[in-house]
Length: 400
Image (cartoon, rainbow, N blue to C red; front, side):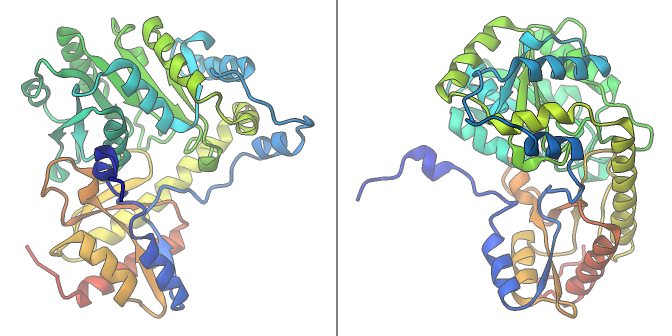
């Protein structure tokens, strides 16, 4: 029997999706599963984006240019300029989701064996993208009791070796909901300059900052024009996860040219999804104000509910729509599976994402879970009730 490749063997499971078979079985057994494991918002996509696809009169769904339609890139440039990010259409490469944008960035900027430093916990699929590109992830740990703030710059500096080529951040953050302030980003920028590194930034949640927080883009950092690569997506901004349209943005012409070769090799980003994404650029400010208000209400319901449960710790997220919380349990993987297999509260149970998969350091996050507050307040409150009841029954409860 042929042998599976090393890359295939080493690709990590998704902590977000790996429990899906147990959720399917729970539903088949008649349970209602409240899905807080995945960042799939229930917010309606903008009507004008849906209408643009329905009203499209093309008779052939043709390839788009490998870099994406010019009209969409020009529209994106205007969007960025409206939020004080000074880029032009030629700085933008349209990709098949933000995932492809980061894969292109890794493969364009890093060689196999190179290292990228990432503050953990981080979006679990970064591990998979790094594995695809043959890149080594070097974690710098952020801590729950500090609200998952950006770790001290000295800790980043201590990890830099001759193999270090880049730093990757997500701001606002998945899975923590942390928003990095201007001071933290400026300090990180200086480190990047000092060591002439690439700075990759996943900013797909930039529209979702709360409590007066203002997002600062890495594209606004002075003197880093040749170092910065921005990763973006329509998935969360417009609640269009299935569109699979993202963007890689950089002023570095060599990086852009290299990424274009990968873009040409995969032919083109999705045609009809670009039609929807271009139309979505006209979404009103009122849409985002309503969505932010909705997420704040959901966040508050979740955090207040969790903090009322004995033994649970959770920081208040400043953005995105995730929270990482510490539970009084032996192992989050076991607990999350047990909830689906063996627990229900009057027919309801909850699917969560074990947080260990969001860390690169072995052993970290084993008693933490990531919760996506992407459902309405009533469902979130019911999920908290289920979680409280489950923690009382779970045989592996451990009060610290």
